[in-house]
Image (cartoon, rainbow, N blue to C red; front, side, top):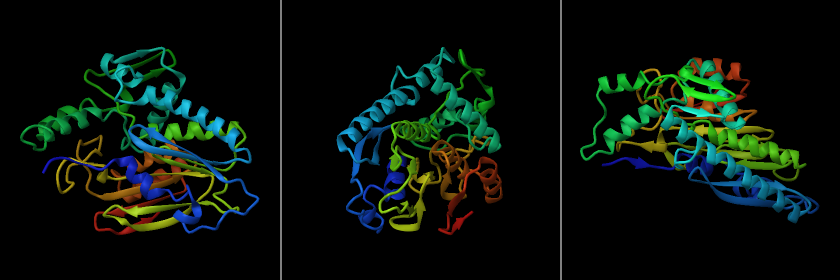
Length: 331
């Protein structure tokens, strides 16, 4: 059996959000008659379904604001995607340097480096050589995992500390390095859109661009609610939790499996090059979606004791871990 694709962000959207219609999706109370009804924008970002839900007394004004949010999403996606030949990320990977990078590109890479430090290297945006190695092996005519020697050579090109980040230039200091921002870009865009909406005067919103950020109320003064699905059974929920003025991100090896049993998947330990087998999913609640996004990715790699320490250091509030036996832990 060949690689099995389950859109990583689609799983998280379906699993994590109960906010588009709180009374229906989460069992929450109906909004009071005097409350503004939700106004919803839906689109596709980074290849996955996305949505923004806001409450505003003037629906026409809300739609105009959402169009500005849509333009901001498109602007940022054009920087961070691997799937457009003219994106800033693709140009950096191709040339090994990027002159005059946009401020958002520099900010995102700087934040990624800080989160790499915080997680002891478990989060590393330079893991693209590992993805290319595994994909090249498993997507070949006779799929098989890469040799240990091939993994070792790929790991030699993985090190976020070898990304030189300056306002006027970003440079990859080692030959053959390449970056992927899939473990943080969705969260970063989510945060930027939430900030834009706040600047426009909105206070009640649910921004879902692969990672979730909820501000204010989902209706009747109640928080939005998040329902996190079982990574082993999409029709089961492992936890339902309130979400107000914070972000949520979930990650797991289920996103892309190279083999039928999920032994080899799209999340790599940057330090060893292996596909970790500990946690089946990690959900992180944090003030910022970019932080939640990166930590959820890193926590798949990290043992629980290190997860707890990283949560404290990052100012994140909590994490829900599901291990390979189905055991759930809220830490």
